[in-house]
Image (tube, rainbow, N blue to C red; front, side, top):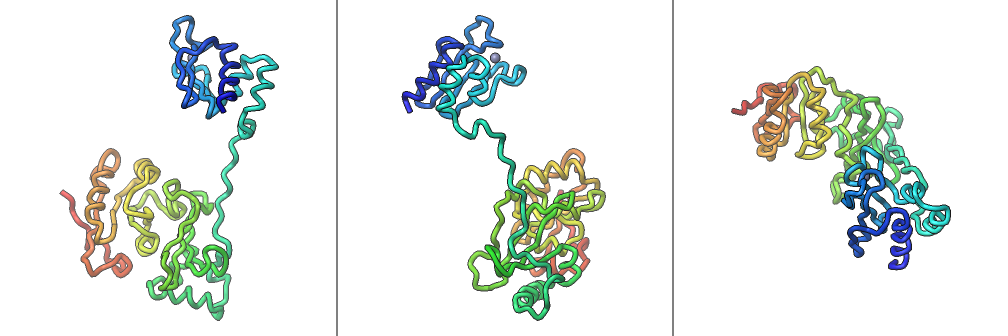
Amino acid sequence: MQDEQEIIVDIVRNFLGKEKLHYESKGQYSFNCPYCDEGRNKGNLEINVFKHVYKCWSCGDSNDTHGVLGKLIDEFGTKKQKKIYSLFKPKEENKVEPKKPKFKLPEGYTKFKDSNPIYPVYKQAMNYLKERNIGEDIIEKYQIGFCDKGDFMGRIIIPSFDDKGIPNYFIARSWNKTTRAKYKNPQAEKDKIIFNESLIDWEKDIYLCEGVFDSVFLPNSIAMLGKHLSKLLFETLYEKSKSNIIIALDGDAWENAVKLYHELNGGNLFGKIKILKLPEDKDVCNLQGKIDEFYFEVK
Ligand SMILES: [Zn+2]
């Protein structure tokens, strides 16, 4: 490693001169920038031999003096130096950033309408939904299904679709009471999506709730997939929401709800935030439309 480091730094020294500072254990060296230094000896261009990158802290953005080290050596090095460097250059450097694999709903995801009610797995899944008061209208609207094979076997699947109707997430809830992990998450990052954005009407009142199983009982609602608002959801609400936002967290999350209220109550949204405070024996799924009786005024 030491040798490799020394060889690469030597190549750079050949066209940028001696380094101004070095931090060998981190593989970091600073040189005068060939574009913006103009004899001032600032040492603004930094290379990292371990990471194979460089950047001028002064003109990195304006002169595009940043990127993979190979780019700098291509620009200033001799043919021979480029060839030497190519022996050490990380292989990925030549490739374009690999495209993220397309998000897929889980293997075996089956909508109820595409299955047969006499199929035992169908029955188990449907019984679970019935216990939670989830009827056919909700199943249809949210394209709720189940998995009868693969990693998510034995789970109810509620898919999420982005604003263009492309699947981007799902939740997978086990219907087996003895399963230890009630939920199993897909690989995708939940903070990078807005669950079922495809179903949101930004002109109307929007309910914010914790889980998807609450969300299906609230009109025009977004499940935060937790008690906290992601940066993406916060920004999207600010930009798109034209009406009221009603915070509808579980009864045990009152402090989170108040915190959320204060986070949201500003700018375009000022005066439009409400909190739904439910009596302890009530859950959003058994309100049956009488939601606004429970609005709570925050002072
Ligand atoms: Zn520069």
